Amino acid sequence: MMTVPLVLRDKKALVVGVANSDSIAYGCAKAFHAAGAEIALTYVNEKTRGFVAPLAEELEADIFRLLDVGAAGQLEATFDEIKQRWGRLDILVHSIAFAPKEDLQGGLLNCSAEGFGKAMDVSCHSFIRMAKLAAPLMSEGGTMFAMTYLGANCVVPNYNVMGPVKAALEASCRYLAYELGPIGIRVHAISPGPLKTRASGGLKDFDTLLNEAAHRAPVGELVDIMDVGYACTYLATPFARRITGGTVYVDGGAHIVV
Image (cartoon, rainbow, N blue to C red; front, side, top):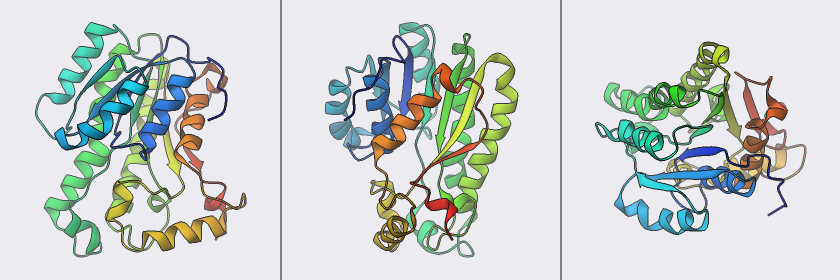
C-alpha cells in the first residue's frame, strides 16, 4: 500500500458494506484509516461478522456493529451510537447491493415486482435513508459516497435488474447533492470497474466481464479496491471541495472505450 498523507486526520468515517477483505468498502475504510480518519464499520449478519471482525481490529475501528438495512430500527440505532460516541460524522460510504438470485439471473423481463422492490430498497433507497440520518451529524460539512457500476448507464449483459436500480442510485446521488450542497455536504456516485467481490459472484459469466474490461481499459489493467479507496479519500478532502453530484469512474478508463 502506498504512503498516504494524513489528509483525513481526526475525520470520522462510517463505512457500510464490508463483507470481507475483497470488499470495495474495505478498500475505502483502509484508505481512510491510512489518511488519519477514525473508522466505524458495520456487518450485515453473524456469518459475515467472522470475516469483518479482524478487519475492524486491523483498522482500529472505534465503532463495530450489526447493520441490516432491512431490519427495523438497526439503521437508526447505528446513527444514534455515532452521535453518542462521536457527536458528528464527516464521511459516509454506502457499498451495499442486493437482489434475489432468481430475479438477478432471470433477466429484467422475468424480474418479479417483489424482487425489483427488494433490490431497489436495499441497493438504492437505503442510501437515501442513511443520508437523512447522516446529514444532521455533518453540521460542519461532509462527504457521502454510493457505489454504482457502468451497467447503470449502458447495457452490460447479465447485469439485469441491477442496471435500472443503479441508475436510480446515481440519480439519487444527484438529487441529494442538490439538496445537501447548501449545508456543505457533497455526494458522489463512485463507479469502479469490475472487481472480484462477494457480490459479483452472483453475476453470470463475470470472469468474461473482467477479461473484457482489462482488455478495454486504456491503462491496460483492472483496478483494485485500494484504487477505489484512494479516489474516495481524495474526494473527501478539501482538495475536492467544489466537486459534487457526478458519477466518478474508477475503472482505468474502460468506460470511454466501446
